[in-house]
View (spheres, rainbow, N blue to C red):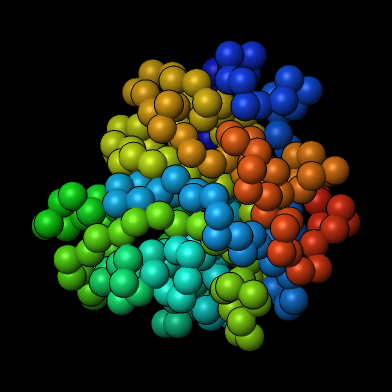
Length: 267
């Protein structure tokens, strides 16, 4: 647990947000790990991440001892192109696993590390990718700190636009992929956040109050924030994107209703 260090900033200057949105976001969506997921299967609106990106999720796992539970997947406009996977690996219930496919649909990046997922504990998970770096362009962070993931695949990779996203399972609910967890929010930047920015987000407040739409301290990438799904904050629009509002995670969801919204959040 970490202490909130600053009050929530005003959203009045961020036109895409609704002025009625409360500053304190104490809601999340509870996925049952059996048949529930949130998804948009659209291919008309690019999500933002292309060849350089950062994705952050606040997750509270409850999947022990299940393996393969998928927290988040993104895809391009067809097949496996530009696919991004964040899930629990097959070695243990604590193993973090990530995988990245290139614009042609070939797996290029893969990494894992045991001892990451903590059952019943809120965690800030961040993954980054820099396709302009020919060396070692992908990383993962937990609670503001860089993870020493075992990079078992690290081939050259070029990505283009992502369009489809699913939370709580693999695309369209593949058997064995359902995640028993709570997800508070998911954010995406079409830029590479620095380790200092990631640490600043974690230590500058909590998942229920830090305003990603405003620069604060070492965090200076608010202009690059492309998506911010604050799951369950608006019970009338559970999967609303609070940046552009044009990609809703309820468009092709399964089993998610207002009863999945619970009062629980990272603190």
